Image 1 (cartoon, rainbow, N blue to C red):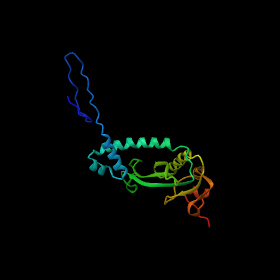
Image 2: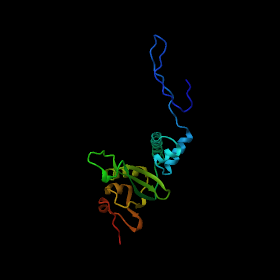
Image 3: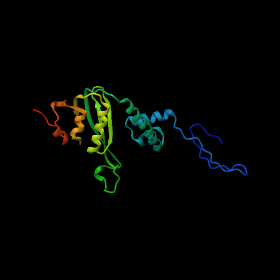
Image 4: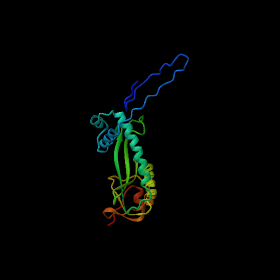
Length: 207
């Protein structure tokens, strides 16, 4: 039997000599070449969809998804190790909208909770353009507060300036937000946050 490099051959249980037990033979797994892996990840990071990446690289979409999950897990672990004890002068909070399976208006009561709208909460060091913390999930107070707790644990100082870039109020508690920034931290465009306004997800403009 000939096995080429990087190609898995499916083999059935062979029949040994009389009087011996049959043992399964495990063929080598199919390993995607390194240059193909780089081509797939490059296409995904450039914004190509999975099917578009499949057409560009000639690699099956199931393999692309498995590779994306493996690389994503490695990037998350690396980010978690590097983004520790960060000093921030100007902090920005933003959120990105996406959806899984279907949009929220098409969700049925019997659908899974993982379907529908999903948001990416992002905490950015505006000076160095670095993503300090992020969280993917539903746009609710529980996820917002969990995101703020993780963000605060990675910052060693109190940000002097705070800018909320989300178009809509982020659902969060005032105690969670005050734990990230100092109570007197100045906000962008001449605004200042009060505990009451942050509790209701709004920012009060000072005259």
